[in-house]
Length: 453
Image (tube, rainbow, N blue to C red; front, side):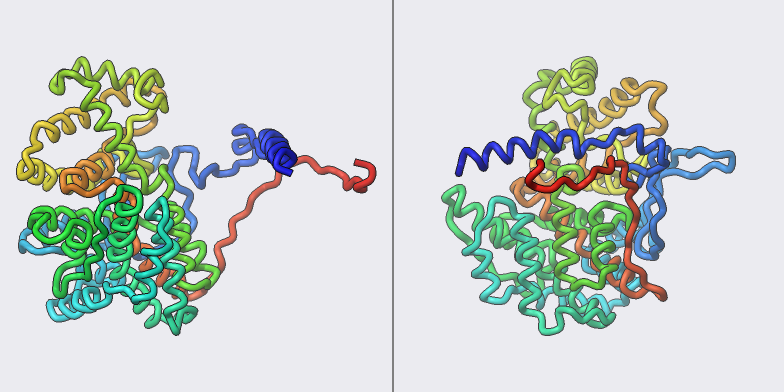
């Protein structure tokens, strides 16, 4: 039976080479927007939102695009104003950001205090759920997170209720519990695969979400105030990025069917896990680690340029032809999230004594953009910039966070945007299931009776 099974799987996989192949030219022939992208690589408009706005270019009256410095808006508030305003008052801001995205307005002091308390009080997990995370260990924390979110359905007496009040309640509960689920999942992974001691820490009463995550992952006295501030900033920066990013669109598509919140959010987690989406910061860190050992003189522009040219020609590193952390689907001149993160990353590098690495990373940023633009030449139709992933992996590494939690950290933040978009999707004046069309380009074939095949 084993040989027959292996042969059939092999035969099917060989057949798929032909039956699943769709030539790129057919997309042009039938005017199909491959990847929901226009010919100029901008996204196809598929919906309306008031949650977030991602801006990287202007459309010219005569046609074409004009690159502009990137802007990101949360409910109409400029992200840079939000971050700098919070920093000017020397406080943390993720909980405030979550409130803004869910509600559509900035909270006053009393509302923020109450909301933050609700988040803190909701972080603890049900004992049975906690034990299930410990007993059903897995190889990837994103899968454990998705499974745990689906399990939350069984503990919610109003799991299928899509009223506004219940959606808000579920959203707050998810935002609060993600850090705890991720921390517990990592600790059991660390224990089972690395033979390390198992630490399960109950969330600290009155602490911010950012501090609680560091506490549950690293333990007391193993992180600084700057670590907390940087992680809080990372959570703010990744909380929302418009309705068109893959995971948020996944949440909106599933939400349009009126499925339950937990099924929809689990689908978003599955989307974010992909290396072309949420896993990009790990790719940047791996590349940076490689360059640190490969480039002999970290200050040599010539050596760096030569190596980047080899990478782009698929002659070095992983031969993918990519420089990770460079370029973005929307941002052209700059990614505002990268700029904001870089401002504090320098301070973190100084605190941890890693200024030399940071200076190397800055030089890599400059030369990578130059190498990419030179390599593409006249074929490139827009400017490129470093995206937020270029610095986030470095920041997490300097904070001493394990790579296993890098993508889950993204989910821990983005669940805020996901839930805000879900609430919006289910509260349109005239709701409609999202149902795009695919054109069939396969050949018709007759049915042949089984005894004649």
